[in-house]
Amino acid sequence: MGKRKYFLDHNDLQYKQIRHPFWRKILHSLLWIAASVALTLFYLSIIQNRFGSPKEHVLNQKIEELRLKYSMSNLDIDRTLKDIKSLESSDEIRYRPVLQMEPIPQTIRNPGFGGVDRYRELNGYMNSYLMRSTRQRIEEIKNMLTVQNESFVLIREKTDEWKFEMDHLPAISPVDPSFRLGDRFGYREKHPVLGYGRMHYGQDFSVPYGTKIYATGDGKVTEAGYNTSGFGYYVVIDHGFGLVSIYGHLSRINVPKDANVKRGDVVGLSGNSGTSSGPHLHYQINKYGTPVNAINFFNNDITQQEFYEMIQAFGSDSIFR
Image 1 (cartoon, rainbow, N blue to C red):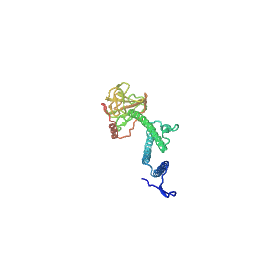
Image 2 (cartoon, one colour):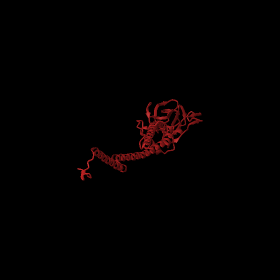
Image 3 (cartoon, rainbow, N blue to C red):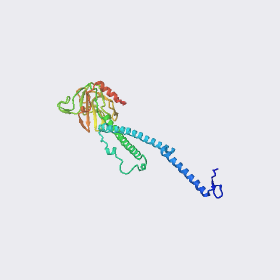
Image 4 (cartoon, helix red, strand yellow):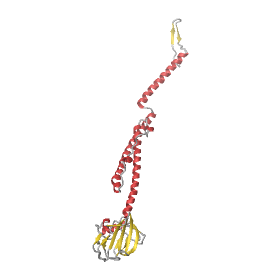
């Protein structure tokens, strides 16, 4: 109960209670409430400005966490870009030149992302630039990876083609390299049997009777039998790419016509059949139907051991081995 207040009435010399009008009491109460609310708001604003609200504090903490995550993501992006650049370097410096492939234009590797604002939904935020730049770098990585993946697919296809061609190329000696080379490719003034000058289209190998003769590359046997034009028992292998190898004057044929052979398969044994003055191998290569110098297709400067290790490494599963 509020304290009562009195005043001295000088007319009758008595103390009388002070009584305010009802509206004044209401006004006084309202003023007191308004002052209390204003003071409360004043203190709250000071506290919030200095310490922030709990909700605002949580939001600020989340913003800092996101900023940190973006920073860590950009470090990962830097490392990823470095790895991609390394792949691109290997692509342009090693694989494509070896396989005789054209380099990829930089306009395809790095097309750019200018023009229309692709990230307008990220505008208006406190960290808009960070979010936009990160999004752009991620899209650049996606483009670079797409281009590089397509490049590796083409390189793999080209490598398979190259390997197929290399496997079919008649690229080894048809006999043990320890055996002496005989008559070479070129014109012979006197044929050892016919006695007159004649072009010699092959490379002879002076090998004993019954020496193993190896297929010099993968291919298909197109002829295997006796040749009445001078080769005697012979084998012809079509290697594709316009290349054909011929093995003449054999004593034995190990492969039938239409058989598929691999480099290192034994196609027959040397002999003295046909127009021959003694046991030897006539080895010939035709390119698009024209005889060429077979000596240019293989390296005879290897040891006997190296040759047989090479033959073994081909790992042919052929039944004609």
